[in-house]
Image (cartoon, rainbow, N blue to C red; front, side, top):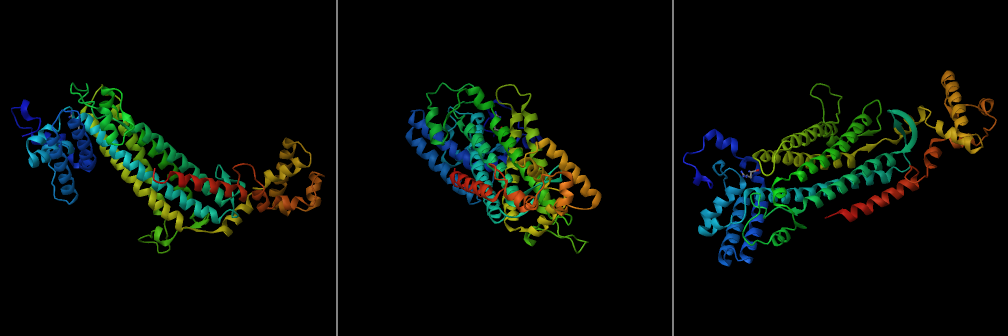
Length: 461
Ligand code: ARG
């Protein structure tokens, strides 16, 4: 019979039984469910609501069940609907009477909310570590390429010279925001709904602060209705993961471009590439493409859960059982993407000559040429127009700025001197961009140092 079978005189239809049950996917919450129940039982006994003897039996019974689940000895059943009732049924089977007292002053509504928070809190910690690993891989590569000149792009048109380090560090900054966003999310998630009961709290003299403390929460949530209705933390996590994946996806897109024959800025390691079943020459960036592809799936989960929640009256509604699969899949997917991405970055071979060649072709020193004239006294807007004319002259005559002779340059402006050639060298154009946050090696070195500190400070919570 069902744990809630008392009110019923008929068996549940077998289709409904399967339809209603969530054990197929919420079984992964077994650890958190047991952890929550142990805290609840301790509190009940300390508050004199159950006896110390019952508490002891409940805790040892639950600990045994935990070990049995982990040893693969337990088969859950859809007849008990979800993880909460499966565990309770197993407990009662094991210890009898005392097991039936565990659910005093509790509902599955506060139970599921506490389980999910505990579970996601743990997952956030793991994801943060993985992001830090990826950042580390970026810093290691960036550390080798402070002097590697590459074209920086806007509109995917060559724009100004930067270093490969600077480009990688831009991604490391995005990831830094992802870590701090997850930290914020964790903080807001870290309040305890246990003791909200079904929705209206309880008449028992429970101590919600105690259970919150035992489970490592900062505080009990303030309102019992909100405690069982709130899934903001799941939506917020999906939002944060969507932003993270958006970053990985943009990065993946660049990796894909960079290893095309048209760019050839990098070559992916054999261990991180795949071949074609028909074209013998192919070496494909499947890892990057899959990360880009899986991003859509995470956005989908975010939209899915937002839509599930949007029309729900307070407090609990069964619709909310639909929160789990999207967050579980999102967390699993992100946890697969991050380490493989980090491995791909750590092992890629950078091809500085190709980057340098690409940097040489597209007048990316034109701004520097205008700055040269400006520093000699010409107003910047006039210098801009003068260099625009020079670029036009160059394209008409098949030359680059640095290939113009001094008389050619001086025919456009008498301010040009021999030192212009030094000013136009790409190494100088990149290396002298020493403004805070710029691509000059001193600046990227400073960025790397800061990021190293960040990683250190954020490891292990
Ligand atoms: N399996 C349910 C869920 O995931 C647990 C809460 C059920 N509560 C209820 N009143 N039916 O949401």
